[in-house]
Length: 72
Image 1 (cartoon, rainbow, N blue to C red):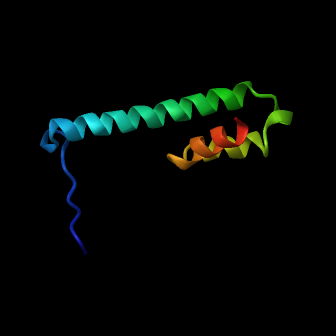
Image 2 (cartoon, one colour):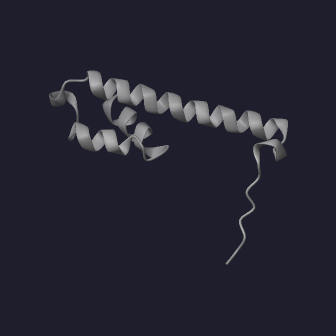
């Protein structure tokens, strides 16, 4: 088996830490925005079942992007 090169947070450079935090915040923001929209939107305005969209939100980062692109 191949050994994975996982780095600890302290082993990342400042630029790598900033980039990772930026990507995480974008992902969380997209997911939160899509979930709030899904919850507030009436079922007849959702293309598909709301329950399936809610599950799709956790397929990162494709789920929230697909939902927002489909409903905007």
